[in-house]
Image (cartoon, one colour):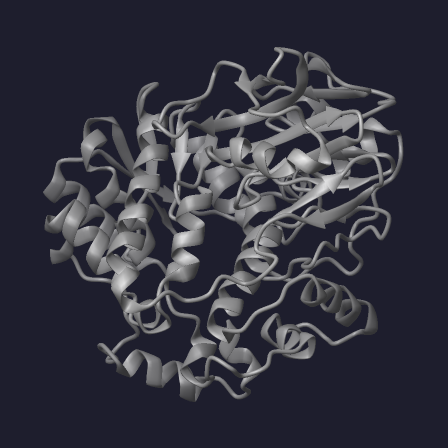
Length: 476
């Protein structure tokens, strides 16, 4: 039996002009002709004359590294011709947020740059998940049949219900018209010359520190640590708030290196550390997780972020993870491609190990048609970010244990744009980790990264190339 809606959909929001029902105890806000219902923090969005024209939902981090808890005043009244000014004001923030702006002729829902406070739209409204949207409008959300496999997900705006669409990163939902419009990265970012790399790395480090500083400003924070590079980069950028850190590592059956390195780092640096055991949840918990996340993927992550975190970490604290750093590192397909190699929807489907059914090809083709690129390597970064991260990782954050605030410090427009523009060779060699760690907390360099047995250095890339049977699957 599922828990009551206020608990089942904790940490989510729903938006509509005629909501049939709202979870008990949730606050309701009037935004133009729209009603916003949520249990998340909300800051008013004001026009230059002080009139309320919107709401900033969630955990927004200001440019000076603080949690926004006061109204956001736009520099211009929201109109189609002032959209750039409105968006610049919204995306001056990092963190995990969504923003609805509703004025005459301008009714839009924006996501943070990683879609980590994910949203779907349909049936005349929008919500965090299709299941909540359906519940609030007294409809039925169509679950996937058959269920998605372990690594399965819906991309390019698809969900398991054809009447509900996912809002893809870098798009806003046109609430009046009922569709989505791209507002950023209309052209894929172009890889910068080597001479610009130091400035890009500084931008990345500064943005990560802003979010970490904001999270730690209110007390202790939990931060994931593994034998990988992304969590190590995160920790290096958190040195200034080390007294607020409590590290954690999931003890997956194949994660012996993660646990060993996590323990070694915590001992050496004098940081508290919790190893979280992993157990298969009950069928009831699996179903609860799937409904809570809107059937955006498999229930597998219920083992760690839902059950594991809920049972083994202190509730009510920010939960920081290294998701998102992948965009700054090499994409395996780049080992066999050149910057001008064409990419097709069929190749993308092969990368997702998904059958090239007509509706899937059509969805990806629409996404392809919405962006132009001259650099295939930069396009691969955009494809990964908007489809894999935004349509898989972002929605799964709703499956975090109740009471925890999941935050991804890599999520900041300036950070994401800088990562996407790093030179291809720099990304392929994962040099971002060396530079961020060396500058931020060089003592962390002494600990090994997880490598495939017997394959140090460049041989890892040779292994990856040999292991893949088709060109398309190098995109993984």
